[in-house]
Image (tube, rainbow, N blue to C red; front, side, top):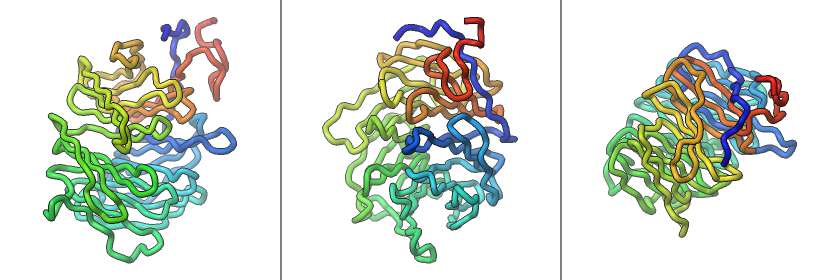
Length: 322
């Protein structure tokens, strides 16, 4: 993987007024486009085109939004907030469809592939599943060993894998796989420290987990593949693997303002400077042509995987004279 000879010039996506806490891309759509949803402490998740252009803002939360995700067809969005609710939105009209109360901060949400159900987790240490066709019904609650909780610490991330598997990660250092049909715990993996982030990489069928100074690439359904773990010289806040090439991953960190690119051996290949605050979240686009970073500085920056290439609003090598 040769170093790019063109300087990386990010596109800056403004609009948020507080730190950006989470980013999530949709899958690639039939027409080759995709969208991006951002969560922010300003309480207003934003939807953007693949070019970075603003589409709309979801208005209704009364506290910081920690997580937002899109349904695979992009027609629905879900968000989890410090206002003790998880909400589901129509992405075409911006209309609020459902608001589900919780008893504490909701840190993470995940929609079923068909957008039929919503999975939530947060500071209650509980994991719930809501049936969107019966929004007034009590949710299913997932607990471990008959106790009151799913995790012994805050649930930092929930993801939906395939048709009927939920994976949850907690500050207790555990990643847990649940059968969403039986609501039973299937298996769990213990890490030495709290989990700081966990994202599903759908194309590579892996979970990317950060804990301490380590990034773990775990088969999403634990079905035979190898777990690949790398220890870095710093503690990443978030990591994302290239969805197509799988030859590199990007990270953010709360210890500085930089986005880093590593190869799969963990070697640092590039350091991208531009943010004016710690980087909370990073995510590759589904076509692997760019990655997005969200920062304490309130901005989202979009970075090309191959600087100098014409893609979206980047028009070739005009940035540094060739």
